[in-house]
Image (tube, rainbow, N blue to C red; front, side):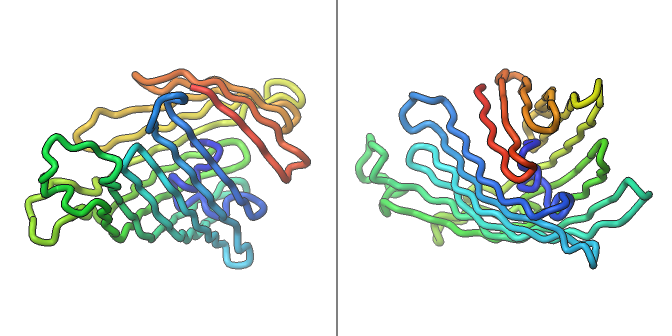
Length: 244
């Protein structure tokens, strides 16, 4: 979440000094057939003269016979609070696609009407909003994707579906502590809530040396412990890896 917080919060668009292009890929439960795989490609940057930021991203999330994909564009306006602190307000709009490949499903009842069409797809509009308070030392953000709360309707003649794009609520925060020269400790947290599930959080601590080499550990509530490392080359290229 801390490596590509723009995909979590549209208000992050343009908060960096340069345009940022990123590819993020997550493979869960490695070695298990049909395990979830997520791919994200994003781009965002500042329009300094107008205190604005713009960007967009595409993603593809595959789990077994199901696929969730989408594309979004984002706009953010940055308001100076002090010489060092700014507040950014952002909006995002896009489309989400949900698809089921029935050819990958073994049915007990071959006449099941739910699979009468082997390939089914639903496309829905989406929108989100967020705010991001930031400086060189800290950041705090709040965002909410899937604000439209749309139904996912696979059958035109069946209006009793309970499938819905439920609203999510996110909080992010972090701080950069300069412990000694060239060494920064960066604690951060990512809080997630979606009704009716309990609140879940991720907590991470990274050590960054000379803004070049970094390593860290994270904890995801009731789920996993993660270890991560990365390398920044000339402030232009970053590569990172984590294992839960």
